[in-house]
Length: 112
Length: 117
Image 1: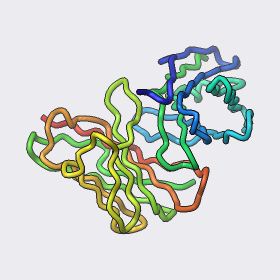
Image 2: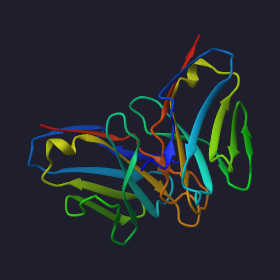
Image 3: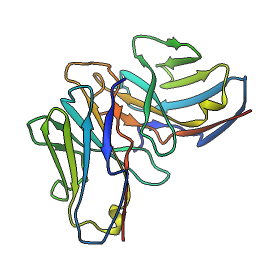
Image 4: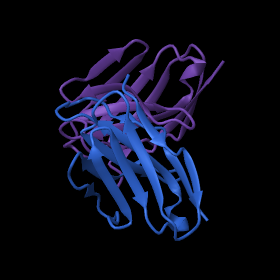
């Protein structure tokens, strides 16, 4: 049973445009959500997070939106840059960073 | 930022042999280490959680006698795949966290690609 779902395996976006990566979850006990970025042959690196008490968190070009009623979150990247091309993992946990559950990842390609 | 060094980055071994993977936290004390495994086209799956100085807690379906985890210090955790078989071929990755840091993101190693022939 996959508790964190990323239904789009890949996404292509033109440089300068907005990239929207989506994530759905099924476990209503999750109260902390994270996005990680992963380049080939490297481990995931933390990008941005949001707790369940918020519905939006912004950090530079990256914004995460949380819709608790729909159990849905999304990551917006504006403007998209070629260096953003990577696999993005959505992750969720209960009570902090312990036992983070990952989605399968979405491969983003930003076309120059 | 915090760095977790994982070695080796890739390893090929023969069926029946054992392989040890090391994870070191270089600039922070990793009171907790998480070990994940990723098969092709699947997500990172948590295998086990280890706290420094205590036994690891394994997720359901993960054989603790096959995947030996040692977390003897605040900067080093090891995963030993014993009597490896081809089905153990996978991408193994560790991550470290600090006790009491609610909401602090995990810091990942670069992973180890294990191929068992």
